[in-house]
Length: 157
Image 1 (cartoon, rainbow, N blue to C red):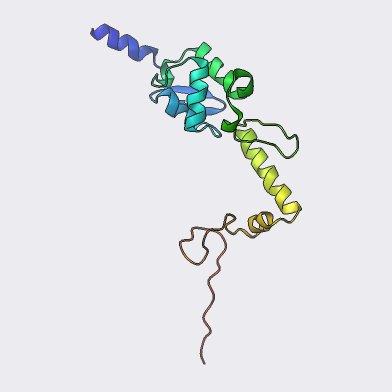
Image 2: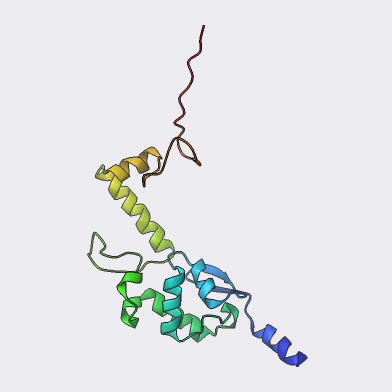
């Protein structure tokens, strides 16, 4: 019995790299995939069910073939039958297609979207340019970071 436990620990990879993200091998597969930028809990569950990997299996116990299968499903989710409402970029303004982006591609595309909004001078683009809240949050208080709006008191002489 003791030998089986030590063998199991030897098979466990401590760090698994998927899409340029280091994931701890001690996390379950469903939670570990959420560490990748652009993958949330629902999408990770869909990826694992399509790949045929149990949700509770540890990331460190996955074989190279399993990791490759997960990467293939995340790259082209539409070809594996994952519904388009789980994608993070639906109806792309340039192509009109539904797609799912992860990692640095998602960050780069987000930056391009902000630049486009600033270039066309939309309300959201102006707010981004000024460093203010974009989605209608309060500005008077409960503010963290950004430009200061507080008025200076007049000094009486």
